[in-house]
Length: 164
Image 1 (spheres, rainbow, N blue to C red):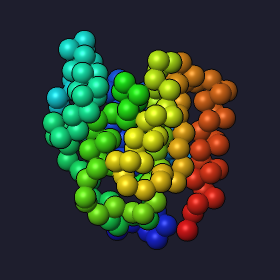
Image 2 (tube, one colour; image 1 turned 60 degrees about the vertical axis):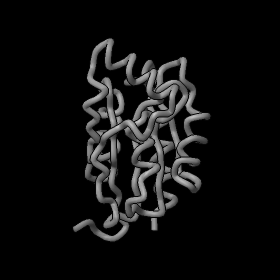
Image 3 (cartoon, rainbow, N blue to C red; image 1 turned 30 degrees about the vertical axis):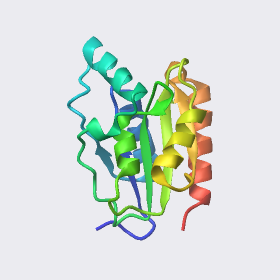
């Protein structure tokens, strides 16, 4: 049973960038990680094209993911990539789910240079039906740099200020 004030991390990772970031956050926050599986989007060129096509069509209803039970947690951080300016469809499925979840939802996105996160934040809030508590984005090319450290540290500081 999670302890009071506990945090869960839910991640969808297509190429590994988001999984690496989720692991880092989990270590810093002593939080469990639940990885979403979306077999429709397998690694490789075809999976990449399918993900982009479905994202452009906003085909959230076509995604089959097991929505984790987050009702025992006080906060959740969703971690995943930006696809065609939107949060990855498996993340959107969690955001749109009517399942019980904590009131406090934060979002940390990974992205390429061609997908800035601002539109993805707005779409995530629309899907969720409420404002996100804390948001951040890490460009894939900044992995392992001092700038990554600054972005993650800033996210964790803002996230901690919202602690119950």
